[in-house]
Amino acid sequence: MNTKFYRDVATGLFIFSLATPSFAGITFGDPKADTGALTVSATLRAKYNYKDYGKDIDPDNSIKFDAAILNFGYESPKVFGSAQWRCYQWSDLCDFSTLVSAYAGYRLNETDNITLGLQPIPFGPSRFWDSSFYAGMNYTLGLQDTLNLGVNYHAELPSATKFDLAYFARDGGNYTGTADNDTARYSANAVKTDDPTMTSLKEKNMFVARVIQDLDFINNDDLKMAVGGSYWYSSIDNKRNNQDGSRKAWSLFNTINYQNLGITLTGGQLKIDNKDPISDYSTFGSFDTEYNIANKGLFYSVDVNYAFKNVRDNLNITPYLVLSGFNKDQKGYKDSQRNIIGAAWNYKNIAVYTEYVMSKNDVFIGGNADSFAAGDDNKWNKLANVIFTYTF
Image (cartoon, rainbow, N blue to C red; front, side):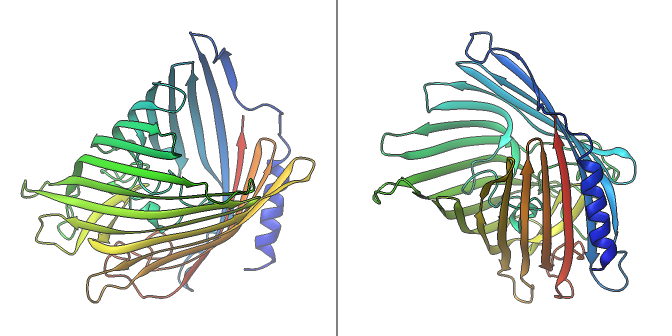
């Protein structure tokens, strides 16, 4: 990295701060009324990337438009809902655009509800397992921040136990992209492909369950801890031979929050039986990219963050460290890792993420389509990732 990196980032921060109206979202109605309230908001994002993938790789040393996001939220005493659409730019505006979520829910009481539609799966500690913007490796494996089409029942017991029981009929579908295939999607899912070196799969009939137990045995108002586990079973439809395989995954997790310190530990196992002659890996896709992942392995995620609140004039700064990886069972397959150190800077409607990503055997960080399966050159690649967001 050189002085041009810092100069470009500083310029981007200055330009980004010129237009900062003090409102975020428009609300119509009253959420306490029977008719409810509809809130519409939007986010604009720009990015700066510096790629250190080797001497033959363009470092992409520039500030670019990243995405426009449109959000709809509905709240009433009994019914609620949410929808989000995203428009990204690879080379032209909105050359990749996708529906992220669209679901409605009904409150059975103050704690229990049922949701129906395109929504996050209840797997792992929450939808997001870490504090980073780029996200750990488990997102790319289709385990974290995955949204599918189905129904979820959420309940909370007097014993401080929370559980989710969910059924998802199918994945979230594909939308508009430059690749003109099944990979034009937000969530990482098994995809169909015509490439004979890859599998052609669709996941269906997903059963997911999660239990989270708050730990109250320590009498300290500053300390909050929870442990939990989740399980995922689904059918894998092999589009080449019309046989049904399966995906089985489990995770265990622990969250610790002490004052402004947050720690989340997650680990688990993935097993895919794709009923394919190519039995060692399965083809997944997201963000206009198709890639193979090993069918069997252990995954993990470690997130440590600390929030410095109201540092100056409502400026909040949250540094974080994320460690994530996928240790594959197949002999000869190289393990994949993605580690991130960074900070989130939040001021009113503006957020800036500054991150340094170190990764190996990673399709999105200097790798290839087999990085999450057999692996690539097993060398560490680095990415400086700076994201500017403005919500209105």
